[in-house]
Image (cartoon, rainbow, N blue to C red; front, side, top):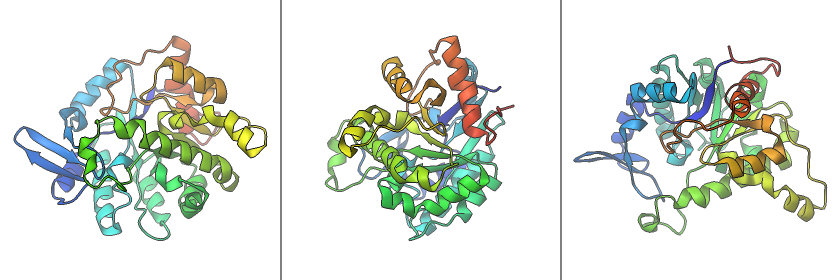
Length: 314
């Protein structure tokens, strides 16, 4: 079984060039010493070599003992929700970048979301190009109505036996027209992202699973700790907390042993997978005991990515 990092970001040349041509966020702004990312409602950030250099990333994979890294378009950029003619061009650039990567990498596809009814043909396009599944921003599943709106995309993934990856972002700009620059750089990740992931998790729990009983779903960053709220959910709804969903998985990006252990106690260690969120987070080498390492990096990702529950990544 291959060891897998299910959550990385790596901008290929086509996407860098496309973002550099833009005059509104998301965009890359040229500075004397390189590029700066400008994203709506978030502080500016420097585009580092680690975000674009595939050779450097391959070396990091070797140091981490990772044989396959899955590259996603960061939904925090807000690309999927741009007007369709803009989002389609940037998503195409993302897909082209994935296709140019060495065999050590795979990719999560993306689809435009600005249309009144998102087109499931975008799912087919990404999967037919070799993507393992589709990434959606957590806000696209923010409540039951939102889950219903993207239902055609979820249904197509379910039909094709491919997983959904729920990723935080973009941050809503309301109340922050210019105030984002005054925020600490970590602020959105500790507030907006966590709230988005929790809302998406509960929306899928409430209506998504019933509508899509075979869909495998991966939530980034332990779904913001949403499973830890099940006691409150049961109290407020007046119903028993549901049993763990064997088709919902959680990447452990940004979290350490206390949070990972707490979520594992609720959902089961068999639902946790390793996601580094490189280069946004520098996790160094995965510090897991041998049993957890095999489960989080190989066995569990095999169940996530393979439609046959007994299958494993070759």
